[in-house]
Amino acid sequence: MMRIVLLGPPGAGKGTQAIRLAERWGIPAISTGDIFRANVSGGTPLGEQAKRYMDAGELVPDEVTNAMVRNRLDDADTAAGFLLDGFPRNPEQAVELDAMLAELAVTLDAAIEITADADAVTERILKRAEIEGRADDREDVIRERLRVYAEKTAPLTAFYEGRGLLVRADGMGAIDDVTERIIAAVEGR
Ligand code: ADP
Image 1: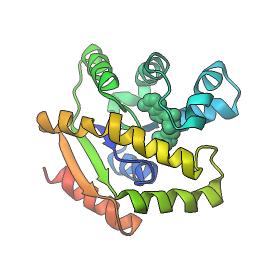
Image 2: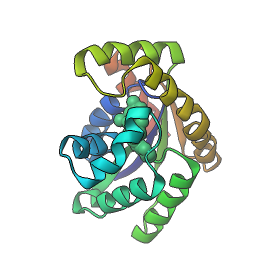
Image 3: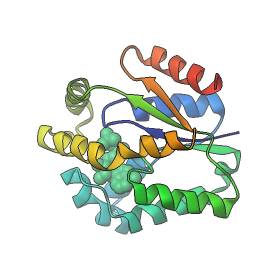
């Protein structure tokens, strides 16, 4: 049983690692970015609300995001644990997550921070943009996403470190090596 949050800058490889780690631990990977993108492509009201923020590299408003995560955590498959990829992304969301977990009478096991330097992540995202064509993978938007990460999300590492939950893992290098590094760090705690 694992309840995990995954932190790290855009392009650090959170999405890729989230799927592998979720498989390893037999839990669902819940990516707020993926849920938003599915809603944007599906033309749902949630997608309509989120799209302009995503296109600009800004955070979708907390009321919208928190409600979405709260609903998702109510699904039966999270009883076995979960890995949150992309949430929380600011201190207010972290407080809200605490409230959701308290209601469910569960606690987090770890906050994993995947580290990567800004030049490397920009290069990775630009490469990915050629393949996937995500609307927010443009150089100016990438820069804004990195800025938002540094300003709003990075402080969460100190928040979780203070609770003894932070596990840092270097996100550079081969995908398999990064996965192994994270598993070793989390399971070896
Ligand atoms: P990346 O980490 O590469 O920037 P994500 O797929 O995690 O990509 O997120 C893409 C976009 O979705 C974000 O820039 C933001 O607009 C929105 N988003 C995702 N998660 C959140 C969140 N927790 N709070 C607010 N907005 C979010």
